[in-house]
Length: 559
Image (cartoon, rainbow, N blue to C red; front, side, top):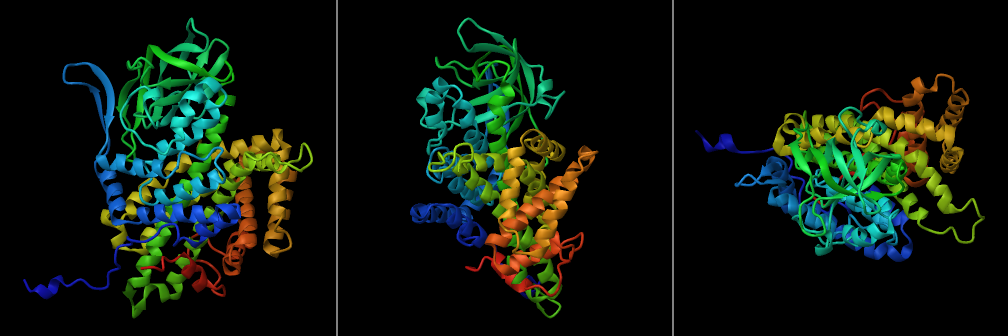
């Protein structure tokens, strides 16, 4: 066969060897905007270091290996002893070591900690999303642990450590630990009040023995888990360690690993507690929902961040491909119709990132004391109220937009995008996860209704936030008025909940972009998402907009 038939032309080079953080203008600007000036230099340095790692060929290879060789369950050792261990490819541990070392479980109480961590999570998720699950749960467990100072004293320093130590040992013997959660059961799912796992009090105060079966337990090789179970006074939160202080294994039977659509590098399991499983109560007995609500809110924000990361990586890949690939007499990125598609995708990605980072900044603000402000109306309290309603709004909308964005980005690569080596199929399989995890769309929409009915301060904070941009764009102003009309009539509101939350999300994103994005981005978003001048698929933006500028903003320019 002639050698000339093997000459490869008109192919885009791999998108590797670049700084994932610095090349993401939207993310870098958000970090600069939301951090105090004194933190800028250190944050830029640490995030650029992480960005270069995430964009490197080595770390991308770790991500491929961790998904090609998924975790395996070992219920027994060679002698028949029950061990309930999950083995991972070494690449999984390298990814976790890199991310824990970058402080991605350390946000609470660290200056600008939530913004810095959120940006880091957006960066590493683009290299490999599955290992982010234990990072998220460990970070989110801190507020629950703090309800029990004795537990927090033991577990929080190790949970927020920058050291990753694999292997099961007593927490006191490890420099760093990971925490998980096992909340849902097969008969209830998101309706955790239907849980049937029982907690029997033991002689020592705060100690219980658990009996039950948990349908989903993510990252079962974590060092401990927050678990919901029915105690004598009702649903209660418990901490269940894998290894007891004396070094013996807790009764924690891993029955099977789930065979999942995506997220294959991360183990998700069914586990059983046999009546001797030791647990320590977290919070008051019968107040389990209250104990874990902070954890749930934090992991919901991580769902938003994870979806924003998947969108950003998919859009970066699509724009990169089209900048090199020529067809029909020119480079694809210069073709008006392809430019429209890419710009539309870039708008969705930027809106998701800006919203996610605004919510991370709100978390940092809740840890201030509101010094100098009127009691009862401090900045911290307003930001806390905003989070109460904006987190489920963002969780609903951003996670739902992820799959169509990734699918359209894949199509931009054509057949090249449909093969595994492009990386797009893994992104597509991962894309529905965050809309399911921590409550699916209906759960989020109903949670927004609950906030509207029972916590009026949350909607006041929402209106204050979107109202900051009033007068800057007539389409945004009209959308705000229409939203208020929609809220004035609450008859049959449950059936309209998705429609209502979608409008809230778009108004909130529009407000943020009008205030902080370049004019061409804000104009395109308001025209298509709020002004009705756009279609039902990507690539239907008004042709009169500055689409070239929108696409160039999304492009990785260093390659």
